Each structure stands twice: as structure tokens, then as C-alpha cells.
Image (cartoon, rainbow, N blue to C red):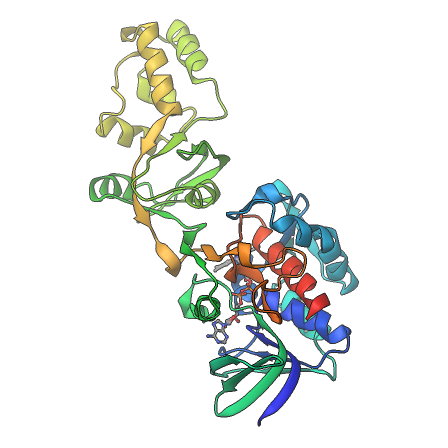
Length: 395
Ligand code: FDA
């Protein structure tokens, strides 16, 4: 059916649904269109099905964007506390996990249901399995094809997300719309994604698959995360690796402190005094998984001898090696498993207050489609809520 709406939102994900609810509450006639068969698919699978929907501690420092100030306005107009009160209003039980991360106790489905209820207004329509094409600017707004219908609107909101998880309906459509209207797109890559290793490393470490250790990982730009590291059969994962992957560039090494929580030199010196015949392997097995120590010895990163055969300088060197283990990733697992897309629509074209495009009045971008990527920990959803909310006040 052909038709006219004041607002059309392409993408019924986190940002699109939030924007639709807000525009709907202002009495605007709204249509949400999505090519997927149902809304909020990424929300449903997020956080292991429990959706890490925000964080107790949110600031611009938790985001990567070419303009580090861009996120500030939206994050202050619609804060984590605003979303927490919405969740509370709907009686959704949530819990805090480490680093202030907030998850649903029961199911991410409650978040999608809540957003759909917020959108449940007579002036808000939704259309799924819908193919959007041929977007054109008209004198008063936009015109496009939705399957075989022609739809016109005054404001067009692009909420098509990033490229991660193509299986869930991710497409580059939003970037194409940006380019069609002359906006630049910051080159995209996978973020919050496991590292793959070069063949030899992969073979050596594959047998550690499933082992997790607390670690401190530093990227070449000095960014550091101290969280769990997980060995997998493909390479390295776990929160610290996912976080640092967003700061890593192909060809760079990362530096891993394998024992950030113990004073290893002190352990060596004390152990050497008390048990001079104890092997380095058995000493280290007190602070690292034994199998990992064995692999480091097999790879000749460490030499296994009784402690009495090491002088202080050598023990100091081993300590330094364990604190500065250099790993050269082969790459990342890519968009197939990435939680987020780095890069996207260049924010220099957008108003940070409204998300409207400066050159094309009436055209808005919200959520992950733009060059804003958050850390692991609920920050990407918070960006979707905040950017969707502010655009919803202006469309
Ligand atoms: P989102 O991807 O949610 O929605 C985009 C919508 O656009 C989709 O419905 C899609 O079908 C539609 N679309 C795309 N192309 C289209 C086209 N051509 N035509 C029509 N429709 C189109 N973040 C976080 O803060 N906490 C968490 O726990 C997690 N967990 C998590 C797990 C996994 C496995 C992934 C992949 C991602 C996360 N994230 C996350 C990231 C978070 O899911 C993501 O940042 C937000 O969903 C982004 O919201 P958007 O609305 O921008 O895009």
C-alpha cells in the first residue's frame, strides 16, 4: 500500500525501536520498516540471551569515534539512569555483574517486549520482511520503494546497525544511503571480536582451549584492559581480548601480562629460598594453569630448571617475560562473531544534539550505523538508546 508518514525508520533494532517510541509519543505518524522477519534480533541474542542493556558507569571515554566529543550530548540527554528507570517501570528484573554491567535476570526478550509496548501506539506502524529500495529526496522529504509500494515521508531515520553477524540481517545498507547523500563513511572493521593466531601459535595454544586466566592486555596505542582472557581452538578470546580488539590494527602485536595479580618475582625469590630444588614449572603452576606453563616451556618462552639454578637477574627476566608476553594476532574472527562494527557514517556530518544530517535536513542516523562503537559492557546498547531517543525528539 502506498502511503505517507511523517517519520520512517529503517531498522527495527535497538536504536530504531527507541526512536519510533519517542517519535510516536510526540504524536508523529511513524512507520518502522525492516527486512528481517521480526524486531530486535540482536537484542534477543545479546549478553548470552540476557542482554547487557547498559552500565552503571557510562561516559564518552567508553566509546570509540573519530570525534571523541560527539557522543556527549546524546548520552547526557538520555542517560543510563533513564533506561534503568524504563526497565524498572516495566518491572523487568535486572542484576549487576562485574564492571557495572547490567543484565536482565530472566531474558533479553523482556527488553524487546518493553520496546514494542512503548511503540504500541495507534500512530506507529511496523512492517517486516520488507525490501527498501530507491530512496530519493523530494522537495518536502523522501520517497522510496517498500517492496512494490511507494512510501513518502518527511523525516527518514537510518537505524540499520553495523555489519556484525550478517546471519542476523546485518547489511551495509545504511552506509550506502549515507554515500548516496554525499556523506563520508569511516572505513569499517570488526570490533569486540576474538583474535585468530598464526598457524604455529594456533597449534600450540589450541590444546589450552577453554582455559581462562585473568590478564592485562595492552594495545600499541597504550590502551589497556584487565579482564579475563580465554584460549579458544581458533585463538584468543574473553573480555580482555574483545575489548582490546577494538584498538588493534592488522600487523600489530598486543602485550599480555599473564599474571597481573601476583608479584611473580617475589614468588620466585621466596620459593627459591624455601625450596631451591623446586622447578620453575611447579612454581609457576601456583599462579598459572599448569598446561599453559608447559606450553610456554615447550615453546622455549621459559626454561624449566630448579629454582636454585636461576640467578636474580634471570628470575627478573622471566618475570618481565610473563608480564610482557608479545602476541602477534593473525587477524580477527571478523564480522561473523564480532559484537560491533568500528567505523561507519562519519559523525562530522551529523548534529550531536539531534542526529540529523547537517547537509540533508530530515535525514537522521541513529545507533551503530554511525562511527560510534562502545566498549563491551552495555555501552553499545546505551548508545542505541541515547541516539534513538534524541532523534525521536526531533524527527
Ligand atoms: P541493530 O543491529 O540492533 O538493528 C539494525 C536493524 O536494521 C536490524 O533489525 C536489521 O534487520 C535492520 N536492517 C539492516 N539492514 C537492513 C536493510 N537493508 N533493510 C531493512 N532493514 C535492515 N551490546 C551491548 O550493549 N550489550 C550486549 O550485551 C551486546 N551483546 C551483543 C551480542 C552479539 C552477539 C552482538 C552481535 C552484538 C551485541 N551487542 C551488545 C551490540 C548491540 O547488539 C548493537 O550495538 C546494537 O544492537 C546496535 O543497535 P542498532 O539499532 O544500531 O542496530
